Length: 125
Image (cartoon, rainbow, N blue to C red; front, side, top):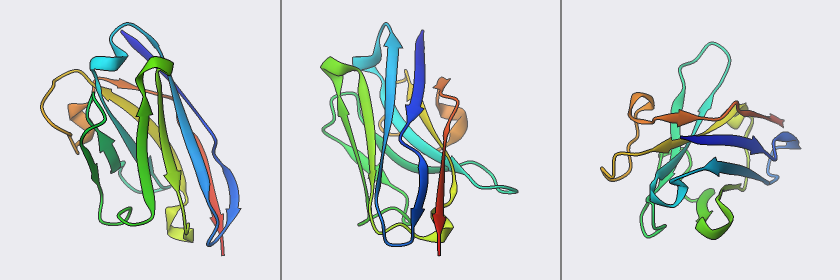
């Protein structure tokens, strides 16, 4: 079982940057793939970025490519999402998730086993 707690959200102007953090506790973190999702009001939760258990592989939604970077620090049980050149359409709740399956980098919400409570990101125009 893994518990996930996100932090680092906030209000930022368009073009600015934020770094989200996800702190994991419990056993098995270093063997789990990790992902970041987001959900805007009235919309479905969508995949943003994912990273393999070792950190050797990453995947991004088209909306995140070139602007966002996912990274992990296994000894510290942390996952990060660096977000640059933020846009108003990036406004959403951002969620960290863990996948136990060792099946690459899942992009669907239902493929993840553990979720954090989320952190809000608001980008003003």
